[in-house]
Length: 161
Length: 161
Image (cartoon, rainbow over all chains, first blue to last red; front, side, top):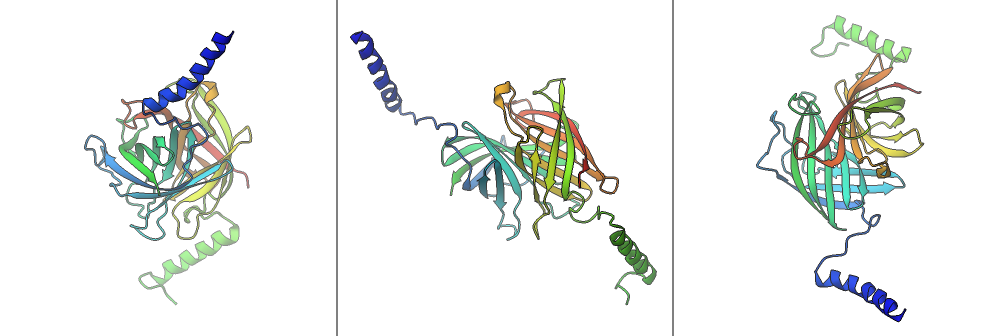
């Protein structure tokens, strides 16, 4: 009986010690991670793809993104003050465990240029760091894609401001 | 008084048409975003899981708020059949409307979460909204241009107001 108790205690002590000695940061708990707050998100091309197959692009500006939560209503906004003080594309978001998802509508003042929507998928490295990819679905037909829409992806890294 | 650059007769016809629209209560379909503002009952039909041939239809209540002054994006709430409400965003470019939202995620069903774009038009003088649904699942797929599994669906709806 004593042996079993000592063995159980040893396991309890050993697990946290193993994590420390292996240098792993504790995995963030589901529910403790949130996008709420302000983030600076930097983007980079994937495999040198700076435009879509149909030649559309958003470029690679740093994005100042603000996310908020009011109960089950999770909202987002991109502050594009580099373009204009009122340019604020709106979005929504959710977090499942370490994974994040967000979606935005593009800001399209000129009806003659393609508009679209952006979907952002990524993970938290810690509470203040995120990374992943964004897919832009332009409202331009492309029968080579499963959705039928011209699609462009790029990667992003974000840090909490 | 004539409008510069517009023949007097054309100006008169335009004025009569505009007054007629206003007095008849006809929705200003071509006005900035006015066609979509209000409550809608919308049915979304899409695959039950990534790549599945089996489809499911959900009836949603969309409560679309007007855009803020100067904004090209607006917000809405989406309430599903289980009375769960999430946020969404919308925009209108010409006759095209786009709504993006993150449906309530229930991974216990063994189906990945997803993000939806409803891409379509308001038709019939503001009495019908219908179009394509783009589904991006939370399932990585390196063969997809989005880098995540996608599917297509459809939606249609009528105003409730």
